[in-house]
Image 1: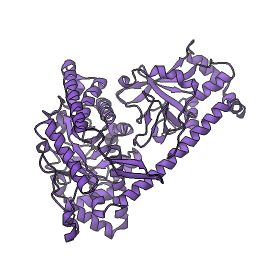
Image 2: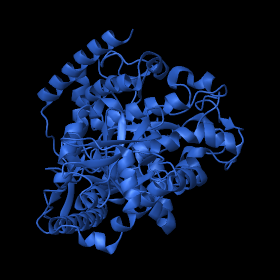
Image 3: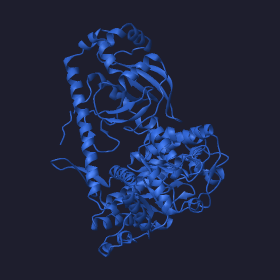
Image 4: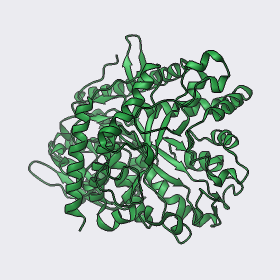
Length: 602
């Protein structure tokens, strides 16, 4: 197994650990996740960002994990995030050294620490050894963007005013970026950079090996099981899980009659919820037990738990108001606490995914359909959705933003929504909140059935490559699961897109997960399999979607990496927590959540 250096940053950053307290309570963002921020176009700092191109997030507890949860580095780990030229984070790069800016949060600020410049200023006697100079940026919690640039300095015996650091930076700019300045760097720092580079390269090698192992694992499964991973399907009953179909319903082969057909995800409605937490826990456990008997990859368990009128777990979990009510009663920071208690209970019950929150801005056009399911205006939607995403990700549950790009006053269960807004309004009202929230790395984004006149007006959004590939994937940079809304809704079927045709078109457009409110999906699997055998390009679309689903299952803990001696192997994850302990966690979280709600709702 690859060996990584344990020590990742030097003495200059040690004093910053004392500034980490209160990290979780300042902004509704989890440590180790992605942040979006626009750094003002100050030429001096822009040049620094362009030359550095990386940023490091220091976690609160000294333990950093990749967002894919495939690697953990202890003893002062840091996570690299790639920036574009304007300082907007693009994606995690991995774990490496300090040849970058370092970001941490303290007292409502996000600070950019410049350890290399500090080290070079120390070399010429301008700063004491225990000092780390920093550029501070005030963060607006409503949108996660830097709104004010300031300055801070930390030292055991002194504080450095920004003016001194700035003047020193200008005066010694040739020194800071010259070859001569590099020669002043100590042997210890050079060794540190070498170890950091070694770590980064090892991490990239590990990433490539695990990607190949994922592909190998996928190819060990039958074509039918692989395609089944794309379906999020309603299930039968609320006690013991059973598959309603067999693989023979797809292949027509008698020998496949003994092999159950299990979807990639199980969608829970109210009638699937047992009367109490213990019964619901038994039901979700029975799904995993069933798959283990047949050596199948277990499905993830998903539910719509928005709060208010869309509350599948009402009476099971602690009180969860509607989105609108949450934004009226609580600050984003308090909302994050409310959603954290809810996420802890859902995780204990055996759920992996919450089909919430609604990230649509409330407008006159969609208010009759959305009502109190939206948090309100753009600022509220972004800040409260960010709080909910943060809360669920910390508890290991995937949260799904919906419905992209939006809806109208038409209920898609009965008709096809038609959005007639011009392109500028679509961008500023519909796309803007999703564009801001994509950087928080939600587990998925659920597409709407709406047709948008300004973009591919003839095709529903969930079937449109213009919306899925061009906008969501390429322009917004979303890398999670793209989920269709229910393809059995009348919005599609009555407008020339029956379920089987819609499924093929959705996969071609780039959708990863096809949602079905029906319990039987073998005919749709058969159609996808037939299309893949006929068209190689469609087969590639299927495989890319299958890989994305497996990546999510790794993050959800249904699959896990093991080191097999000769390389990485992907295998079905076992249970690491007993049922008794899970029930105890649920009861504790429910009691604490209800007490917190009662004490904060007024």
